[in-house]
Amino acid sequence: MDNKKAGKFIYLPFLLIFETMKFENTLAFAQSLDQADLLSDRRNDFLFPQQNGKPFIYLCGNSLGLQPKAAREVLELQLSNWENLAVEGWFEGSSPWMFYHKELKKLMAPIVGASPLEVCPMNTLTVNLHLLMVSFYKPAGSRFKIIMEAGAFPSDQYAIESQVRFHGFDPKDAIIEVSPRAGEYTLRTEDIIAEIEANGAEIALVLFGGVNYFTGQWFDMEAITKAGHAVGAIVGFDLAHAAGNVPLKLHDWNIDFACWCSYKYQNSGPGGISGIFVHDKHFGDTTLNRFAGWWGYQEQQRFKMEKGFVPEAGADGWQISCTQVMPMALYHASLLNFEKAGFIEPLRAKSKTLTSYLIYLVNEVNSSLGEEQFKVITPAEEKDRGAQVSIIAKQDGKEIFQQLVAHNVLGDWREPNVIRLSPVPMYNSFEDVFLCAELMLKISKELRR
Ligand SMILES: *Cc1c(COP(=O)(O)O)cnc(C)c1O
Image (cartoon, rainbow, N blue to C red; front, side):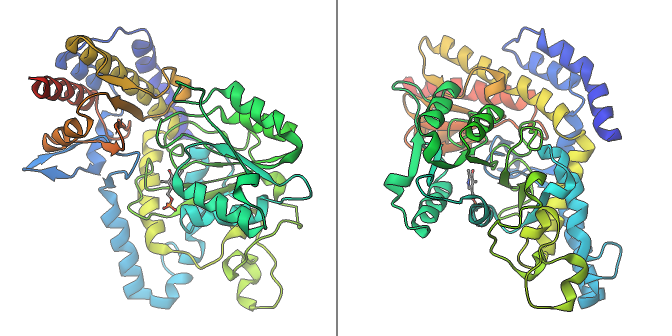
C-alpha cells in the first residue's frame, strides 16, 4: 500500500514531463529520458544474457522475462530449508511451505487488481485454463458456444477445442472466432461486441486473451466483459501477455475468471508457476464443477484425510496438488521486484513512453529509407497496447532479424514476417530502444546495397 502510493507520488513529475514531450532521434535524447527515469536502477536487479562478452539488448520479455538476481538466493534458501528441515519444512522454518503460497497471493493481487483471496499460484497456464473451463464452461441446451479472438495463442485454441469436444460438441459448431476486418490486423471492440450480441443466446463462455501474443493488441476487457454478461454468458481471460504488463482491474471489471503464466512479464523463469483469478461472487456457488485434489481441500481439515471433498474458501479451493515450492520461490523473488517498483502503475507510465518512443523511431527509420519498410501492426493508441510492438518487415525480414541478433539485440521472430520487440519497463532503457532502431536502419540499408 505504502509502496504503491510512493510509486505514484515519485513518478508524477516523470509523467508530466514525458506526456508533453516531443521525441528526438538521438542517443543523447534517449539517454536524457533514462536520466529522468526513476525506475532506471531496476535493471540492476536482473541478469542479462551475453554474446561475445557483451550483454544483449533484451527485447524479448514478452516471451521469457529475465532472471532476477534474487532468484538464486530464494532458491538457495528453499534448498537449505529442504536440507535442514526436510519434511518438517511444511510446518517449520521461517516461512513454512504449507502457507507459502499466501505470501505470493498478497503480491499477486495488486498486479491483477484483485483481492488476495481471489488469486492463487498453482500449476502451469494451459493446465489452469482447462481447470477453470471445467468450472466455468457450462454448456446447457442451446447455450453451448465459446467466443474467442481469431489467432489466439495455439495452446488456448487447443484447450478450447478439446474442451468443447469433451462436452460432445464439434468445434466447428461450438467455437466462434472474431477476426479483424479485411485489410486490418487488430480487432475493433465494436466488432467483438456485435459478434457477442449477434450470438447472445447461444454463448456459454466468452474467452479472450488480455493482450494478443501476435499483434500486442490489448483488448478492452471491461467492455467485452459487460457485453458477455449482458447476453448471459460467463467471461474469462487468458492474461499470459497482460499480467505484469498492463494495469488490470479483474475484480472491478467483474471478470468471472482468469489465468496467466508468470514467466513472461513476471520473470519467474522457464515453465514458471501460473496464477488464477476467480471473482469472489462465485465463492458461494456450490454447483461449480471442479477437478479436485487434496490441496484444494479446506486448509484446517486437510490432514484429517477424510472422504468427501470440501473446498477451501476462495481461489485456493481450485488447488489440486501440494505446493510447488521451487517454482513458487522463483515467482516470489520476481514479485518482490514488482513491489519494489511500486507495482504496475509506475511501470505502466514508463512503458507507455518506451513503446511510443519505439514506434516514433521505427517511423524515423522508414523516413530515412524513403519507404514503409517496417509496418507497426500493434495499435497506435496507448490504451490498446502493452509493452509489445509487433512490426511487419516488408523486405528481408528474416535476415534483418538474424542480423539484429548477431548485433546483440534479442527480440523475437514470428513467421512469416513479424518482428516482436518488447521493451520491458522493469529492465529496459530508452537507450536500448534507440540502439535497436539505429541498428534496424543500418541493417536495412546494408541489405539494400
Ligand atoms: C505463453 C502463452 C501460453 C503458454 O502456455 P503454457 O501452458 O504456459 O505453456 C498459453 N496461452 C497464451 C495466450 C500465451 O501467451
